Length: 194
Image (cartoon, rainbow, N blue to C red; front, top):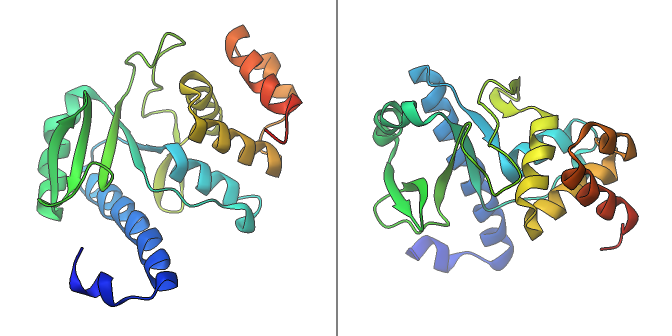
């Protein structure tokens, strides 16, 4: 912790922490845009952007910056991000770009590689399955939903519940999903209180 952090009040620390995640995402996506490297923001930040299109008050903060890239672009990504303070590392088998030499894995841009397996349920979508929203390439809604249903960790379930709550997704989505993923979504629909 730096001296500035220690002097902040708890509410100021909370705001600062949220701003750092957003700034990290902005710095990374701006660098990738400038370098012409295809990417797509995924995970909680992508969900937040989609939820904000319906109800800004329903947006949930996330500590993660998740970005989809193609494996063949990793070296170009490293060259694009390095001047902006990011350091490439592989931690617990996950490619990431730490936000500075002293950063922890929590303070990183986590990379998901397009087209590669994500659990037994399927593959990570391609970066081309994205749209431009808020000056960033954001994973398309159907791809976010499928990815969250494939990984289905607690934070993915929370993201899915947020999308259900604002009406981005609903019962009709189960018909367009593979059976296993449809069953997971149906469970969330049937148990709205968790």
